[in-house]
Length: 215
Image 1 (spheres, rainbow, N blue to C red):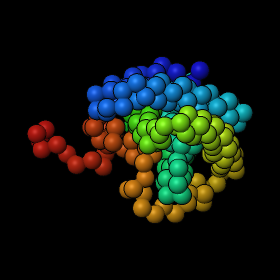
Image 2 (image 1 turned 90 degrees about the vertical axis):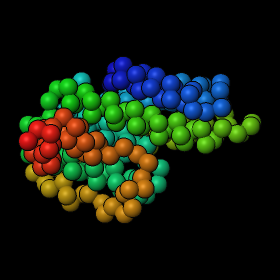
Image 3 (image 1 turned 180 degrees about the horizontal axis):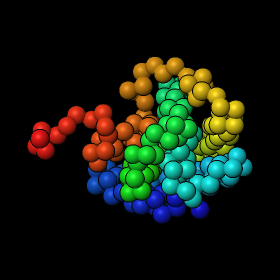
Image 4 (image 1 turned 180 degrees about the vertical axis):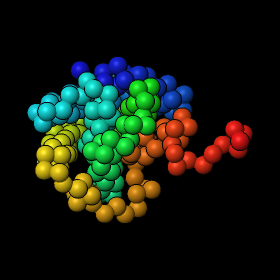
């Protein structure tokens, strides 16, 4: 199962934070459990679609790409969809050039995936908490879960099809990157930005400013 332990770890992280910072009590705890289950289900869908196009999400770098697909799948508005798809386009460029993977080590890939799924967990929890209302809450929550599952399948198909055709015919991923407006206001994790942050934090980004303490 794709990243099951990371989904559960992310769920525990979200649960701890929510429990300490909200008065919704039992309802909030139930939502965190629900979010973890939803993320596991989304991961299964992505893994199946990836396998259909010949990508094995058991490989670390494919887990990184799949994390970006999950962000794209969870995007709720046009700005988030454009930003997350553009991030996948940039990641595809790096993967085709092998530029990122020459720098990104095994432990860094694990950190990137963990950051992505934890951020996604917080994003989904926030959306579900906003829908905790009497009577209608369960109905709305069920509708959100169904919509997430459908979006995950449709957008995974789109993302992996674009990547597959790009690699097969040597196309430029820039051609399918949408214009991004107000990207700073999006609520989904952008996988290429998470990678850049990890490289900077680990001191392996050649473009990062030198640390004065090490000079």
